[in-house]
Length: 222
Image 1: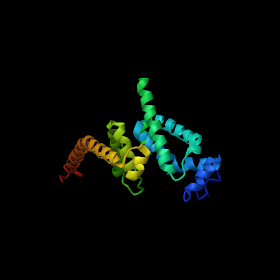
Image 2 (image 1 turned 60 degrees about the vertical axis):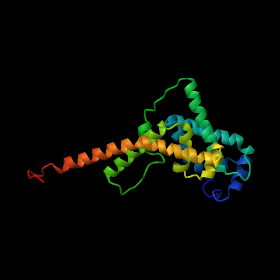
Image 3 (image 1 turned 180 degrees about the horizontal axis):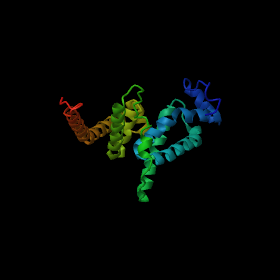
Image 4 (image 1 turned 135 degrees about the vertical axis):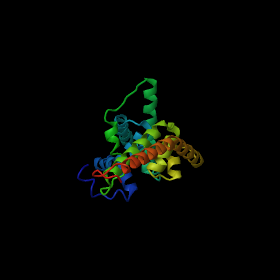
């Protein structure tokens, strides 16, 4: 991030930021990338389920934003405009992979996945709680990967990125009714995938606690 990006108040005045972007300001573009990079990456990663591909597509999203900013319509939301580009690029990348029968597995996806937006950072959490949290996040990511992209995008935008139904509709360029339908179906699919996983882990935890409780301490039975 450039030294100029820190003191600017563009976060409060989007119109000024857009004006500077359209004027070709490097500092404004630096601010745009800094402010929106995490959101764009997490959205793209949620669609692609591959951190390396998501990083590449995220770069492409900001390149396209830089090239197309002059066509941005004042009055629109810069965030939803960026997210619309993100969804398009992510879906285009998926189609490209399918056409070329490309199958890639990122060797560091598991480690990188721990630092994404789903992380629940709590300095007071116990080691067990942190492990359980990481396992839950990985389970959710794995479940999301099984939901068709049509519904996955809507769920990610609404439940992970916190966009309103109207904003999601603007990003996906569909009606609010269609958005609500996709989110409902996506959530239902996620629940069907995750319910057995949650039940299995609950049973495993109960078994572990029961086993621990039956162990003798210093030669004495509990």
